[in-house]
Length: 259
Image (cartoon, rainbow, N blue to C red):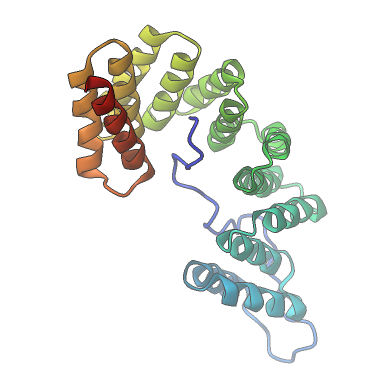
């Protein structure tokens, strides 16, 4: 949880068309634009050419694209790693929407919180994620993301509370159990941490974060061979991932300690 890499599949690059109103005609044009198709095409372009997607979104917005065009523009900015601009526009989009669909507004704020997190503004990220949770208290990912923010701020007791809520919403998710185990370790409860990590690996034997954490717990317990086994497994099955990089670093430290 001290690493800044995202541990879960992000919703950021997915369309969130629920609740968007797609008008059937474009301003100043005789031919109608299919805005729903345009939105899907724009989001796909973000994955390949975010710079082109941003320009396309701006052009589309000038032709009556409305909120969907603006949302695609925010996705492009995020993909271009201009996180503060993406976050600011997402917040404005959520606030400007005249809709009773609080889930949609919460999704936009959730994405804004992630963008602020990646920009390094943890205080703003926390505030925005908290607003998203207030609007829609059943968003599992919202609690996970806020827990990550709290962990980076060193507030592990509060992070654990959010992870407990996330676990209650989706008790069969290994990633949540792995994070909860890490929070418990930072709070000095290694025995309970190991229970969570064991449950996570029972659900998903190759969960990288759980393997990484179990290796740390084994190392703390003096089981260097067991720690090495877990970390080597990560390197062997997921070379090039953030978890594998962390495992490799731990292996190097272990070798130095052994020597």
